[in-house]
Amino acid sequence: MIIDTHAHVSDVKFDEDRETVIQRAFNSGVDRLIEISCEMHYWDKALELLKRDNIFAAFGIHPVDATHATAIDYSKLETLVQNKKCVAVGEFGLDYHYGASPQNIATQKESLVKQLELATKYKKPVIIHCRDAYDDMIVFLKEYKNIPKGVIHCFSGSLYQSEVFVEMGFMLGIDGPITYKKSDILKQVVLETDISKLLTETDCPYLAPQKYRGKRNEPSYVVEVAKEIAAIKNMSVEEVLQITTQNAVKLFGI
Ligand SMILES: [Zn+2]
Figure 1 (cartoon, rainbow, N blue to C red):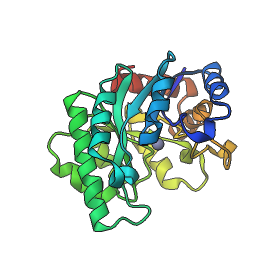
Figure 2 (figure 1 turned 45 degrees about the vertical axis):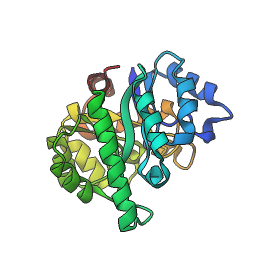
Figure 3 (figure 1 turned 120 degrees about the vertical axis):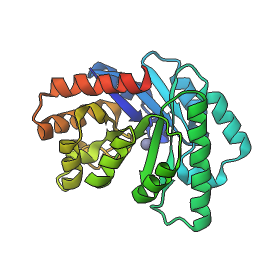
């Protein structure tokens, strides 16, 4: 039994065979999956997925979309967050990967505050996206008084940064890159972090694990992440599956 706590099955890359992909996941031992719906134009598709058992969702506004999100989008988001099967707010956060202007950074931070407040208001955990912005995120969160519980999705920072986030109460989301040969720092992070703080994710259709690298990622591949965590921590795969599933149940209440 394993949970993919971070999938984007609504993505256009699954339009041809979405049902087959979902079925393959459930047949291969994926017990539950959380669909992360963070692009406004995919929200309706995610709602459609929620009609199925064992699929839950998080709704949010991705930092890259923050500049064109309107007041109407935020009020629609507030309605979505109240959906019974919405188990978190996200992913949202900071993304400086494409070179963010000071004005853009300010907008991303406003969006970050709005969604943190939304999570607090409806008592939901948060799924934080952070790309090329870890130091800034740490400074920001240290100043922010009321941090909800949550996960730093697809963590790829330093060992020091991982320790700071865990100390703040966050879990770390571990994805396909843990299986890549050159991920020495990430492997070190997984080794040093208590297993009670780790979640298994795919971030599909992106970041396929080594075995499928270059192909479209999908929820059934999440087991590759668990296998690698087990190898690094010298634990059995079963034990890793059991504990990371418990972690997801604890954080998201699913
Ligand atoms: Zn994602």
